[in-house]
Amino acid sequence: MAKIALFISSLHKGGSERVMVNLAEYLHTRGHQVVLVTQHRDGDEYACDPAIPRVLSELTPEEIGGNRIVNFLRRYRKLQKIWKKERPDLILSFIGKNNVMALLTARRCRIPVVVSVRGNPESEYEEEKLRKSAMRTFGRAAGVVLQTKRSGEFFPEQIRKNSVILPNPLNGAFLLPRWEGEREKTVTAVGRLDENKNHRMMIEAFAALAQEFPAYTLVIYGDGPLREQLQEEIVERGLQTRILLPGSVTDVAGVLHRTSAFLLTSDTEGMPNTLLEAMALGVPCIATDCPCGGPAEVIRDGENGFLVPVRDAKSLTETLRRILADPELAERIGTEAQKVREIYAPEKALPQWEAYLLERVSSGERKRSVNDKETSG
Image 1 (cartoon, rainbow, N blue to C red):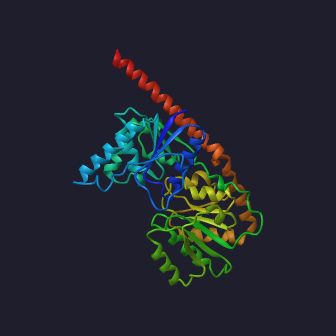
Image 2: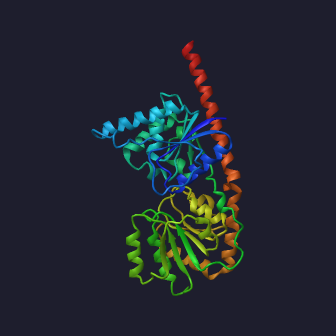
């Protein structure tokens, strides 16, 4: 058994955080020693098994002082002390700056680090300084986990050769039997209310169909900085009883299970968990064919779902009309969609993560052994 440290900013409700909690609990049940290292705690977080210890790496108010450089060095040293104290056999880091920081701080401790790029790398490493740091440090990683084939194109050949694509494990809550009865007259979306999710596109598309399908409502679950703006737009269109923003939802499977269609209108995505979850429940799905190709990796357009161009509300309108107007088409698409379980069900996906991480542990041990022999010789 191995000791594995999982490193992420927080367990705030989101796709990457959900995957990390799923991984932590699975590895724990498999008998591995797991420690969760997060920068901070958030109010709206996924619950994790209390038997899994959690360590915070962010500076406390008493530790903050001086300028940005001083605080960066203090964060660096604090994280390095955590690795020295915990002495994991492997560190798995998720997302952006965390990946670079994990590689930098673990180097002297001689702990292998696997980094995972969870979104579109063009966005995750958009800032020039961070991008250069990633290109320099990723070559030292014990492994690089990517979400899609397209995302590998961002990196040079050396990093691509050391990369692997691992499936996002579905939560068992989304493995319900497919709903075979009459579906609710709802079109559903789940996600943070921000610019990237582009909920305005689905509001515009649904508004164009509102009179044609008077029994249907669009329900957008989630919260975020654009909530007030989106609500104002809904009121301006006079659709406040037809387009609803109920806020965050705990039982995502419950609200998706019987819905008539699921929409994902993001400008960019890695491998979107909510899309996988809706498909696993057998819901007909429409998603934007956005970089870095997550939706296109799971949707065969017209067979198990539909892809529409990014920011193309007209295409979304036409495609949604097809689903709402043709129950037989919707049934066929939903039945095919559910087959994503064959790849992403937890019993399929999680063992692949475990096997990969343990292989990286073994690889790191072999490398340390060789280095020790060379040093002693």
